[in-house]
Length: 605
Ligand code: NAI
Image 1 (cartoon, helix red, strand yellow):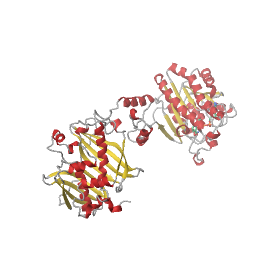
Image 2 (cartoon, protein in one colour):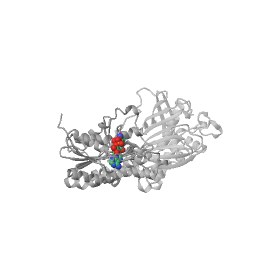
Image 3 (tube, protein in one colour):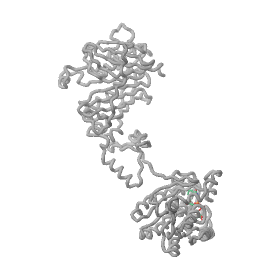
Image 4 (tube, helix red, strand yellow):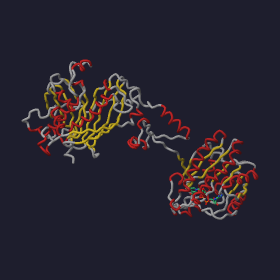
């Protein structure tokens, strides 16, 4: 066994050492060579009465074991008198264990100011008085060991102990600062939250009776002995100890959110609440307040942390943007026509998308759910404002890379919609950047309707500083022949029709604008072809019941020219999953790839 821990030549004060935990501390220190001042006022557990018997008995015990000890019968509220006893008997103080304590438990609504003050006086003021008196002595000699006695109540709280919990938590705060102030003088200050079936605990009925035998008062003293030893360099710690269990406590800060101070509001706090309060692998611990503040100030000083010149991740990751839109049957019918529905007015299969006289049978094509996402983008472009605070990717350079749309339920014939947009991720693709925006949509009552994920690809906008994510080749069509193939020829003025649905980007209508951007002529909106794709799957696999359509994902591989024939090839992977790919037939170019559509097994309620 390693060298025994001893206290030869050291002078220790233990307050409240006539009973319970204090007695055990005093006996341990005395048995290991310390000269002990056994302080105790000899009161009941609620602080009544006074007697010298308790302290005297412990002094006698220490002496009987061959140790050195003197009794002190002052109250800790006169702490300097106890320190005077130590100086008079032994000439110095090396160790102080602030242990004396009483209870005045009662629920807060019944608590008197006297009950409050008394508890603060004994626990906090008492510890202050003693510590204040030993402090210059310890500083002067460059050595000191101080232990505060807190309690689980000071950490978690306890019914009927508001006064006591305040005092005990106060001691934890006292020790945290004192540890910092004592560090350079080799004064170590630690706090314990003991658990022991002392007379105080038995009287209060706090712990289950069957555990009393296991929670011996003597079992707290060894940890206290270690904390008071010359060897132990820990300081500022809080330790839970009892019944053989030993543990250390620390504060944990969630990763938190640095919210943009220009837009701070209770709503912004509410909208970020989950992230503000979440403890996960990003949570941090600091051994002292200095470290905690340093880390925080560095974060505040560097708002671009985790981003680059185009994306301020700390801000963008917090940002939320709201939009409200509405549509009715006319809008739904226009959208249906714009994505090629009901081209043959005598073919009844798709009339239900355009004929409001079908009443309850009127259907809204699910891919119309992409329109609000477009609206969010275009509003930002028009206003010159970023799509989201902190997200300053140049809109003019952006291409629509991928679209994912999920239906929570079929779209009603008309609705007022509320959209909430957040940044899902911003990705470094070397010389390019990618942003993924997530837009949740509810109806005006807050019922979730659908979700859009819009992937923007920004060629020539360097991504360094953003997250790196490897590309995945998903939804690859199988080698076999498709299970279904449907084709529709678009009209040469298809883009002019589709833009009336709200996607007014001049690229799709203005020949000069398109030419300037290096294109032969205005090309068709990617999301228009996306609508054709959805329609084809509904026809081929849903028996034309659009309500079975659950989600669609596809990458935009190449532009479509108005007049192209769009051919959707579909491979059924399971009853509810279809791999899809779209080709512009005349030019034999794949225009939508890595696509998949999921279906509901039955029409959702
Ligand atoms: P205890 O009642 O057995 O011992 C406390 C001693 O302090 C008594 O001998 C009493 O006469 C003395 N005392 C009370 N007021 C005094 C004053 N003003 N000046 C000088 N001496 C005074 O209780 P126990 O359990 O040994 O408590 C020791 C410390 O541990 C207390 O601070 C208590 O709050 C704390 N504690 C105990 C827990 C436990 O499970 N036993 C749990 C959490 C904290």
